[in-house]
Image (spheres, rainbow, N blue to C red):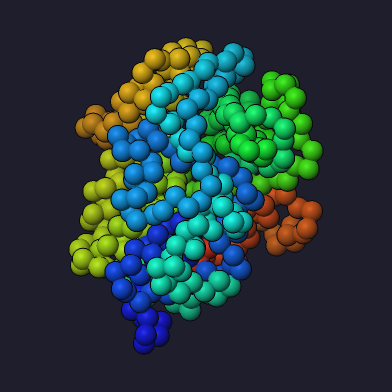
Length: 402
């Protein structure tokens, strides 16, 4: 489409775009990926993220295998997390089945992003780093990331002598409508706060989070700490295609977990689905709506309940569920869709309006700046969908759904 020999074009080399590319290439399709950044994972700093393992009865590694994704990236199953309420009272969550698999994001060897790049190229996809797509045309897969920020994760990555461990604090003071976390694995740590409200106060939230964890965790030292920031459009509507016939995947389609901000499954699964729609000639938008809508509605319902709970009730629920002897069953039931959750979520979507962070003056882009945009990748067209892939178009007018 962008040249006679390339039958498919993917714009953006994040997880969604790379999974789409490898899926097409393995079916002997000619595919070219445009990524305007010089490397994959450029919006990340080697920080840890959890690939959750509770929303499906199928283990995360099996889910990846079903999409043709090899676990060639560094990963570690975590069976235990210590949760804390706002008074810092601990609740130890344990499960025989992994609660999540820890992965690293970024451009370095061993990261999820680098592994997906290698697998896409190994399958035969041509991935052009540092190249913008001139246009997004009919049938192109657009994987350009979020178009605005209404959820912020900000913190530090640093070396540590601590043993592997995971901690999570649910506190309005540290993370408005969200959570703060510390993840330690193999001599490296990620400490961060994830906020879904008052996102413009992210610096103060980060300062409080550092202060709290250094008091809470013995021998936690943050020498050589590097700041990072992640952002996402969490509460917007989804849109899987547009009148021009372009297919939107991952965060470009508005796919992000409204409850806790998880997005990796949405990204990879939507990328795979879009590619298969081109291979098998079915309606991607229809199937994406069927596959993802109820999942997002459950998350929206859970988010609504969480934000409406009295502050005094949150610690009770946290300790009750975290200490459950059948934690995975509790989590599966929490995430299970039903008609009541879907109806309430659909009626309440408009209430989840958040202040969207705008891109600041370009003068902030200096070597010492640690603002949201400088530590999570700058863009020329952040308000027009021009993130990872750099689509030279105006903001897509996708057909949107709740």
